[in-house]
Length: 448
Ligand SMILES: Cc1cc2nc3c(=O)[nH]c(=O)nc-3n(C[C@H](O)[C@H](O)[C@H](O)COP(=O)(O)OP(=O)(O)OC[C@H]3O[C@@H](n4cnc5c(N)ncnc54)[C@H](O)[C@@H]3O)c2cc1C
Ligand SMILES: NC(=O)c1ccc[n+]([C@@H]2O[C@H](COP(=O)([O-])OP(=O)(O)OC[C@H]3O[C@@H](n4cnc5c(N)ncnc54)[C@H](O)[C@@H]3O)[C@@H](O)[C@H]2O)c1
View 1 (cartoon, protein in one colour):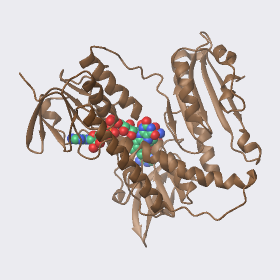
View 2 (cartoon, rainbow, N blue to C red):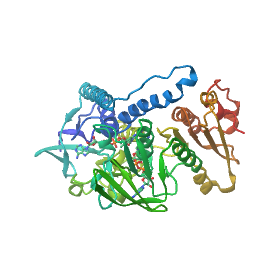
View 3 (cartoon, helix red, strand yellow):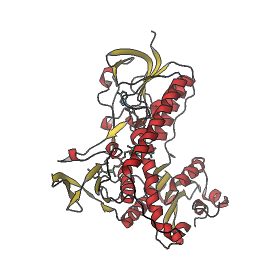
């Protein structure tokens, strides 16, 4: 049987784009369908605009300490409307460059919603196209808890479209998105409250990291309610009233409510039943270690599977898929050492095992080194902004199992350390490495 394409990709986010470009580099005929804008969540309503807002918020924090560094106080005014306009202009330019990259690679971009008709046939706005292999890379979408009045809450998607900064922002969920937005919006002067159902924010991270970030956010004035959730939301007198339930029982008032309680795979309205692709928990596409679904010609990568919801992971899965299927290079991804960061202030980053996970696996053999210190930047102004560093080791083998950090440059430091840890370094290797002075990162080389 002949097909219109060798590969049809649904979704042009980091996973779909990486797979399409890699497959095209092997000389196969590729098309990619995108119902919104090329770049997916990451470029249009995730990592990229978020990091630009983090940079904008950092100026506010720097400004608070600038006078201690000899700068005279000056009047400042942050123009959100102007700033968010330039963020969107930058995103447009990324979209344009992605579009050109696809053209150059000979990949056909179809700007439509795609659905399955059968295992080899896709429906695009009433038109049928066929492909030998199909890759599903449709990402995810925000989950909203079923709470009366939840329709008044917005998701991270709308945060990037806010016409003005709210005075009072309530955030339901203290995970990646909730914590990052709490920090950015607080720096711009919003009064921020976070409601998290777990006993601490940032579930999944090492407990010392969770606690250090929590303290850091509270110290700045962000109000945190843990072991709590929202019973109902009511609109009254041009503001929103949230009834908090759980450990705390209180009614708080907000102008804007951000719901950030997780992401669910975007697998509805895709016609997956027509292709007999099996779904698992929360509608995630079931895949094997090579991203193959229950149908041998259909694959899935990124947030629509139940693996790690991060852009570089989606990208790596997309490349591994194309390498195996079109390049004959089978490669299983190792999810054990995926570094990750939360771009709040103080910043948090981690790679490898948390202490709790290591103890589950290695019991008494686990040894941890943990330190807190004042970075030079804050020593001058005597402000308490501690950095937390933690190494998790297997004392039998000496191997470093995990590294965790809270404080300035955490993401960049952990990124580099991640290479070494993935390659199996010991604490001795770190101790023998000569540092760069004066830096924050050098402290990882002399933990006692
Ligand atoms: C606010 C926020 C901040 C984030 N920050 C970071 C960060 O700093 N670092 C990080 O690593 N990750 C971050 N993430 C997560 C990251 O964005 C995702 O993990 C990543 O985008 C997943 O890539 P993907 O290719 O699986 O899906 P997506 O990027 O979601 O792309 C899927 C694409 O498929 C399209 N699509 C869906 N269904 C169809 C269909 N039927 N037909 C055609 N097209 C379709 C969608 O329109 C979308 O463009 C963040 C996420 C959010 C929401
Ligand atoms: N820096 C980054 O890499 C980055 C940034 C943003 C998002 N992301 C990705 O996007 C995904 C989605 O982010 P997210 O923050 O929505 O999810 P998340 O899973 O990180 O956090 C959701 C939080 O909401 C809490 N929660 C759930 N239901 C609740 C309720 N009813 N009331 C109060 N709290 C509740 C959970 O306990 C959890 O702490 C993340 O898992 C992450 O992979 C990554």
